[in-house]
Length: 244
Image 1: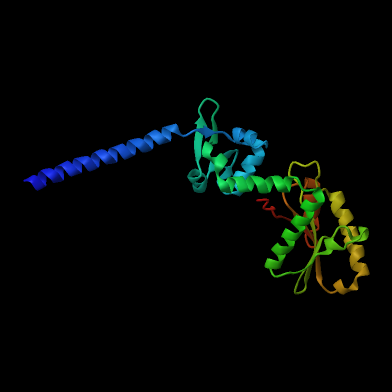
Image 2: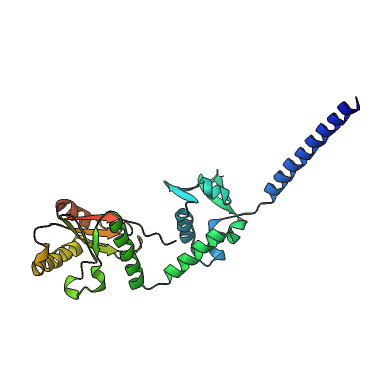
């Protein structure tokens, strides 16, 4: 009998303790402070689009149409989705603890270091990145950008695989930059490369192609039209550079 009473008492005590734990968890949740991307950006003296790009690069969020949606990793790191019924706007806020998240802080620092590099340094980093990309695809790479002259300025990398040779020009520009690739630039590059091949007979007998490799979509419609009309000898590819 005493054993039964003790057992009942223990079960009641366990239930009480479990309820206290759950209550504590709910209390802690209610104390969480969520901050917007704009507030995070202000804290680091950056812009909201820059912070959004970093969060996407970390795979903590992704873009779906005009909305940004938190991933499971993002939710784990403090993301919470909100919906403004009045304005019909979906947005993410983040647990304020993100400001002390080591992975996020490291990404911020890497981004700021990259941002302060010269345009030339950014270009060379991108060329090295693209060279490695094509090496992984089985191409032998000549880093032509290291010793090119003004007469062959249109070639950054020469990539060879079996009987194919690609003359690659790398462009690491911002999508919103004033710089755009148009058909005039492509025609000029085509002429330069044709003259380069004529002076270097070693390329005769190979399947030659000019390829623009871009860090983002900053090619205009005239260039796309020209490339489609000359697709056997020229094309382009977008390969994003992983800043962080």
